[in-house]
Image 1 (cartoon, one colour):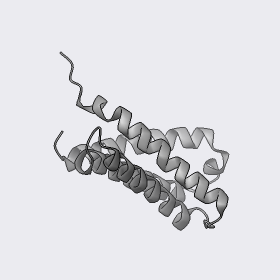
Image 2: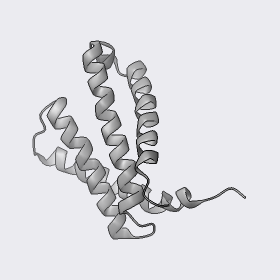
Image 3: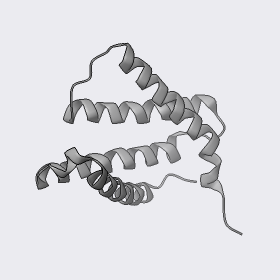
Image 4: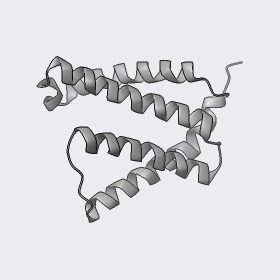
Length: 123
């Protein structure tokens, strides 16, 4: 799959719509936000989803452990940066390090084993 920014923007937009709807109906704190904060949250979801998709298709290789780890670090770091900037402060303690590392490991494993699925074509 070649790099296609327009495709990543489309995927990011659709993903952020779905995540926004699911979050709105499942997380009580989001229901209490005003329209401006909801729009800002949608934009944050859009940036994260678009960046993840673009980085996944353009900067990683399938069946490459190093590439999958790089994807996991990039994605988890991006999510935590937005969380720290806009939701709440993060404190570097043992629990945070374990959670952060666990998320990277989990996402890297998912990327490594599910990467080839994106290359499947229907006959």
